[in-house]
Amino acid sequence: MPEVPAPPTGDRAQKRERVLDLLHTTGRERLVLSGVGTLSWYLDGARAAVRLSAERGVVAVVVAPDGDTVVVPANEVDRLRAEELPGDVAVRVTDWWAPLLGTDLAPGTPGVLHEDEPAAAEGLRAARAALLPGERARYRSLGRDTAEALTATALTLQPGTTERQAAARLGGELMARGADPVVVLVAGEERLAFRHALPTAGPLGRQVMLVVCARRHGLIANATRWVSFAPLDPVQADAVARIRAVETTFLSATQPGRTLGEVFADGVRAYGEQGFAVDEWTRHHQGGPTGYAGRDPVATPDSRVPVVAGQAFAWNPSAPGVKAEDTVLLGDGGPAVLTSDGVWPTTPDDLGLPRPDVLVR
Image (cartoon, rainbow, N blue to C red; front, side, top):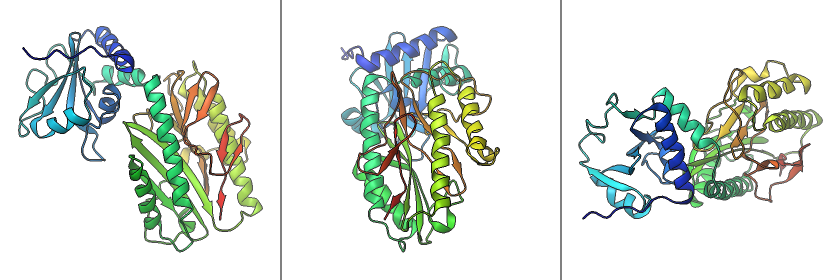
């Protein structure tokens, strides 16, 4: 007789209960999970894709009241069983050349719900929001390693270093720590006005902005750091202080029970209060909840998505030549910074959180 998997325990058991509640609410019998972030969430950090840019996994999970089944192509099953899959799932192997999902699981099949259907997508976003103990521990470790990678990279840079060389070093530091560099942005002196500065062959010059989204166990840590090869002049130092004050407003407003739209309104109002253009927020997104997606979702003015305890956030207010960003976890005592290594120079904000200074070298 085939071996019967043991029932899930700990975080996995709670995630399964959340998904079964979703099935009950929607009146369906089975839910098919296929997105990379959702698969990593449900399988406790499993790497469910091969390409870093993949949005769909090479596997699918079928959640049903009688248990979980992972559908795996034959060419992936040995690695996944040995290194990624928890022991509380059944495995169904398919031919690698055949469709992963058979006709019994195809979209539109009676009783089957797919995660990209609106009811499932919103339900799963809500299920992912409050991080469980194991996830929080993994996130703290990833945040520290991400901060260490940024510090290690920054200390090697020189004005003549090219943006691509800086990006390569940062990506290497992350990969050496077991994290995927899903986003690496580098803006040298001539390109600081660009919010999404893909690295070029140009030199860094007197100042550089480093931006990273690092993924491990499915979780994504987001952070921005600034390095200057000359002391900041008074105008620059003032702009840095003012954008950090905008970020502090976002963080202070992020409280359980409020909606993202309400938090957003407080944060964007701070632009004008801090001497920036009142419409500066329209020139770039401001961030929002994070976790198994870079932003889950991006906050917008009319968002009714609620803030919940145990949720992670990465707000990223910006203006020409300045930006603030770190990943924080909303705990019982308010937000705690995850992307900190205790080495990069910091200054406490009005909430007492260590906020990274511009590293002057």
